[in-house]
Length: 175
Image (tube, rainbow, N blue to C red; front, top):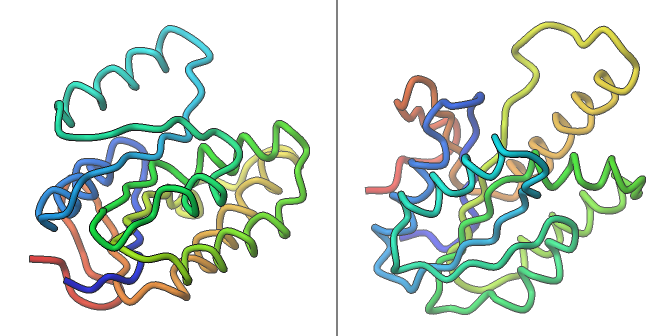
C-alpha cells in the first residue's frame, strides 16, 4: 500500500469517515485516530460516540483540536496507520481561536509530506453548495478550499465520497 498521505473528501454524512476507517483497517498496520472535534453540545457528543462505537476497540485515540501538526509528529510511525478526522473541524477550531490560517495550512502540509507510516486525512468539500451569505462564512469556505487543495497536492491518492460511494480523483482506490 502506498504510504503517502491519502485524502478522503466528501460532504456531510457522505460516508467519508467510514471509507477512511476501512482504508486504515485494511492496511494491516496498528490503528491510531487523531480526533479534531470538540464536543461543544449534546449533538456533537452523540456524533463522537457514534464514531467511537463504529471503530471498536482496536484503535488508539488522541483528541487534538488545535495542535494537529505536533500530534502527527509525535504519533507517526512506520508501523502505524493514522486517521485524522477531520481537517474541517481543525480549521474551524483555528478560526475560532484566531490562528494564522495560512501559516497553519503550510505547517500541516509540510508535516504530512515528511511523516512515516500511512496517514489518512478526512476533510469536507464545502465548495459545492451555496455561497455563504456573510463574510466569515465565505472566508471559511475559501480557507477550506485552500486547505483541501494544499493537502491534495501532496497526496498520491485523493478520494471523493458521495452517498457512500468512493471516486478516485487522484491515484487509485486502495484495495
